[in-house]
Image (cartoon, rainbow, N blue to C red; front, side, top):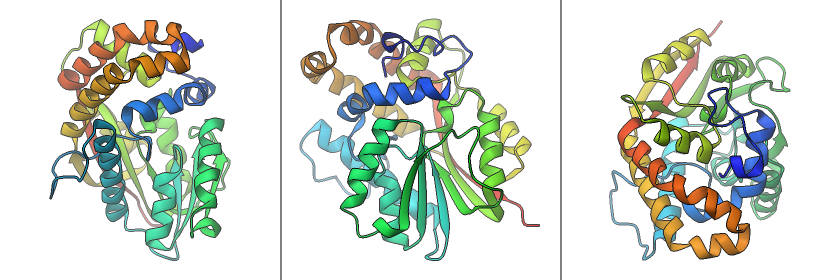
Length: 295
């Protein structure tokens, strides 16, 4: 979250963070993200469209409801079969992976570069009836430690944006999928020409390289060997998530300062507003369902 404050100086320079820097950010500030983004997962929540009003009465409750709704939508979209094995690339704190296994009956392997997230994953897994069908590991998405064609399916929810070499991550996902396998991913793309302040706030708070325009993303998808089966804009949810993060930061600032110290809030204070504006004015958010052609 506050990458510069924790020494991740690569973020925001255009070179992109290393896997260790991303992992260190989540180790140090993962719980802070949960305070601002919602605690049931570590991804953008589905706030629009809604079939019904969520039964919540607080911003935190709204954030959790949005993340849960997004998780359910992603599970419906991937359609994992009971005899299939899915790789969750960037599994966060494990909630979506466990929920996917519970609902589908399939197997799930979740990976993250954050040791802190792995601890949360294991804690959640102990309480799940799907414990025998889910495992978690510390892995680098750009250099996976799995054999070719190891998985029937994969998903990567808000993880690809962190990668310093996103094409390498896509190629690794393609490599470990069996022929005919599918990758569901979400990705942020650049719209328009942002000002330097907003772009720097985004790269620092999200610990990621700058987003690229949609045509560049699609070029990378093709270069990795995938065919696009579905693409869907979910941009409204990014705008609302940024607004919600801004509001929750202001509401919970004293709590954050007490936990993380004045240096963290002093670093974050001037970034959170430009981050919100950048997400509103310059960020699109897409779901892509990609296929590895059969052999």
